[in-house]
Image 1 (spheres, rainbow, N blue to C red):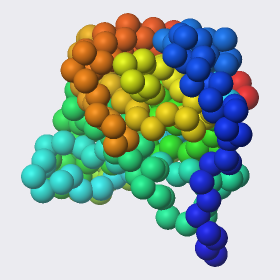
Image 2: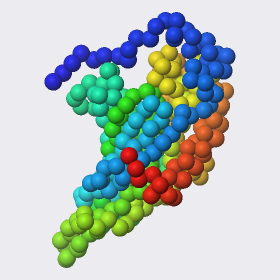
Image 3: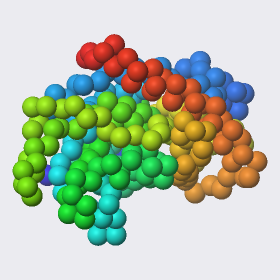
Length: 282
């Protein structure tokens, strides 16, 4: 099945002008400050057959991340490391602009940014996922599904992925000689993590930065920057989207904001994974 690609619903001109006018005054239509996130809520363990899963609601945006572990061959150039693969899918019911079929460029971009954000700081200790060096290793699949789109899919997907990975328990392995079988009835080994990571996405309007842009704000902004931050206070990734350039001064401000807001989001993630039983609800 195929349909004609559709953009986001057209916003009335007066509404768009009002949003821009308010942003220039340091105000937002939903009464947030320029650097404020929308409310974040989490439910974990919502996919029973996954090794780890999380539903994240960021304002009106909802994203599910599910982690699956399988046995496979390590990459030839990394024979002593396990494998991480991130995939993203924009479910058509989430937005009129999402269409059935293979992941589009936006979904691929989200998956790649999440992947790089995890890979660069070695958030997962892949060397501990080797079962038989050069032959057999755990392959970790992080599948991200957008089920309701109201802006800033990347940050919601990153938070969901990080929490899902942090609560993942690997199935027990039954090893007999060279034979290795997975016993999914027993899940007891946590995924080895080195650090937690999140992204902080900002819309750019001239020299004004807008943290966690909503769908309406995304519709009137044409430049965005996403900065990946880990809990060691390091910038571990940066992604720009849009044709307009960003001045060095604006970039410096974005980095400063990302470090501050990133720590707030990481504190929330730590709170969730330190008391997972409190978030095991739909």
